[in-house]
Image (cartoon, rainbow, N blue to C red; front, top):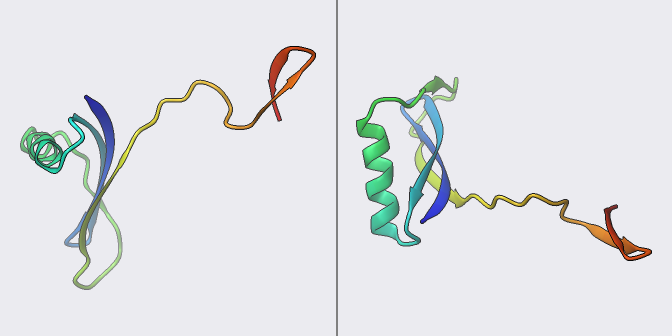
Length: 79
């Protein structure tokens, strides 16, 4: 299972949450609908008006080290 960060913008509101799903469209869609069905998502007003309705998602990568490192005297340090 992969963690995905989901952003939903609809009807002048925004929601941002994470779901765990397999890396395919049907699994992600089911996970998002399950999360929405639980009604534990906090919807925040955006202040944007107009026909803005979109859903985005991205994989959450849990990296425990700095992205840029350099080895100095055999020790890996962040730069």
